[in-house]
Image (cartoon, rainbow, N blue to C red; front, side):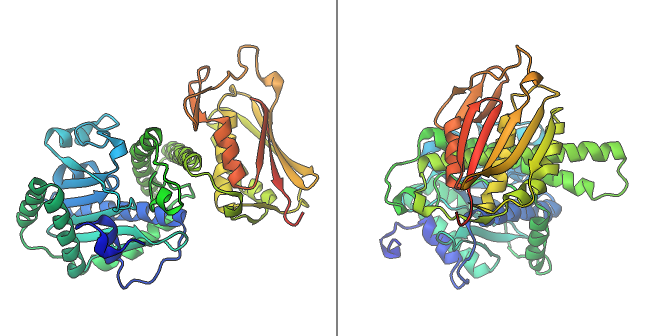
Length: 461
């Protein structure tokens, strides 16, 4: 760990450590704390800020914009420290997705945020400091690998210290922005957190986490000093930086839509047709959130390939997992007018894999395999012994494909993605998919677009 005394004034990594001072060490892994981070952002915006109505305020974030509610972006002044690799992609005046409705009005009214460059010692764990007259909070992810935690601070002393450090940073790097921040805070007048609302934050966060469907949470491209801590000085490529920005821009509205859909589904007075449509939208959102999560995980493995000794494999009941996922896969395939047949014996041995990620990666494999199939085709999954391994095979009946419906040859558009001109489908490349399964202890063999096999080592073999 770098010596704090040697770090420049206003180092964001030091600010995160100060916010966590006195807190117990974390015990979470990366996926779990990312899920907590997204749930905390949704809780802060949906349950605390929006109900307060229009108000002025300021927010400062890194390494990407944390706020996404259009009304809030219109009301509040923001500053975002972002990786230099993203160039101008995160400028509020030029969003990656076209703005509509309130979001467009926010841009026209001068809302949004100023983009500032991250420095080498800042780190890129998420950070947010938000100040309004009626709510002040600082949030960050901190900790080393497998000792991660979410920190949320409402205490005035901690918030004052955070603002002081951010002011020092701006005074050193951009005095004009420092002056703007000081003026904006002074214009807010007296600041006070509602003593009755603050204790509600953690229970609301717990409720939201309990309602979240399992999905692979997106992680930032350059986090925890990745390359530096692993002894690899290779910087992230511009392609991976672009993937990070795109996944943020796509996942954020999808997560918001899914949250709103699930709040509506809790109502008991919905007509059955409306409920079915909402459930369909919820499923589509979850499917795309997981899909973008897999794309990002594949990009991470491309940038930092895991050594064999780093794999954390455990005994996994693949038969039980397949039966558990079968209803979800059946629903997803039915939305594309496809069928599913699953054949897996009950007495098959356990395999060695990473159960935490295997569920999502298998779902991504089924999605990738089925995207080129025509309506009416049936995806057949079979699991059977193959020596010291179990063989999971995905196949589609050849007679289900007409002469003009054979899957086209996918064209690579980089080390991670491929593009099928025949179907217009953007998906993981074969090499990226193989690398994903290798990280889970499996070996992927793909003989054609309609026949694919994954071998998993039997536990104890």
